[in-house]
Image 1 (cartoon, rainbow, N blue to C red):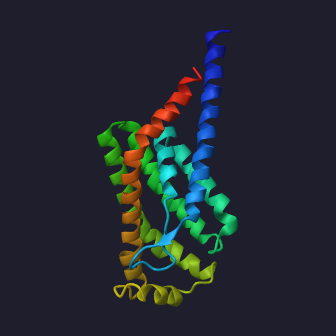
Image 2 (cartoon, rainbow, N blue to C red; image 1 turned 30 degrees about the vertical axis):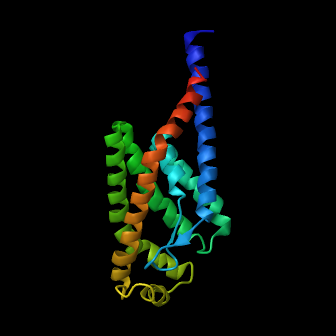
Image 3 (cartoon, rainbow, N blue to C red; image 1 turned 180 degrees about the horizontal axis):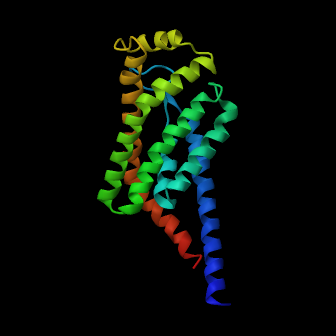
Length: 210
């Protein structure tokens, strides 16, 4: 077999491994997406889960494009169980993609421990900053028009658990902003400690293809 043919076979095997790992991370993310719970002082519709954990690990291990692919598959699989007419899944996909792509793209250029920390902090900041106008101008209006949750209902549900929330802007600043900051930091912190052993396992799989 020529070197070119060997390279082609190796590339095909590595791609197959990446697709398999993508499937594993997607399955983990879907399971974790169902294990959601409420946070103190947060509106009931803002539920926290750890589904971004395998997505972020996938983005680090396979690359940012694979991170977005896992994010997309996770939300598509969860769509039949939606309670928000798909608005929650769409919002989760867009904000999650911002987070994992930013982290994965930066880490791809700086593959060190410090690079990983910087990647997760930058991604958390990007998520929090993006989420403010995104939720104000897109998600909240969409909840009203598609999911049937008018702004008055959303504010009523929110002000009951957080007295700082009195209008649409304060809802975004005192609920969505801290929620996304907390989510980004927690997922990043856990990823920092579990990524290394998982990446070694994935790399050993690739070595078997050579």
